[in-house]
Length: 101
Image 1 (cartoon, rainbow, N blue to C red):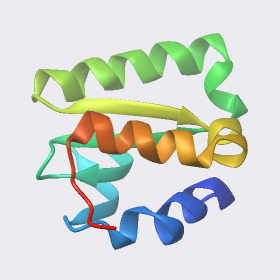
Image 2: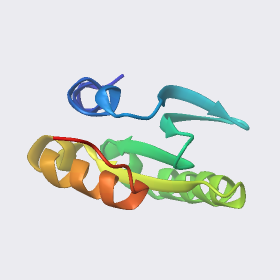
Image 3: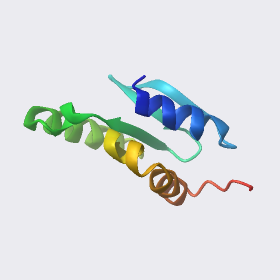
Image 4: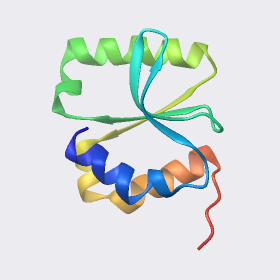
């Protein structure tokens, strides 16, 4: 896992009240994180994902996952580093996971 993936995992995802799988195989793809209860994939993207070929591959992958009824949430490494709270709020809103404080 990248540093940003470790940060998201250890400082948020592993403490959720639902099961989150890391490096989950779905079809011919390996996704960063998968929340089965919410049918949601979370991808943390580095700069390599900004290249045209990578963008095309990501779109094909996302299309495949959506065809299975899976929502794909993508966040950049930069977002995780600089706006961690915003990323976790977005994940909670989009997955409708409730956490007790």
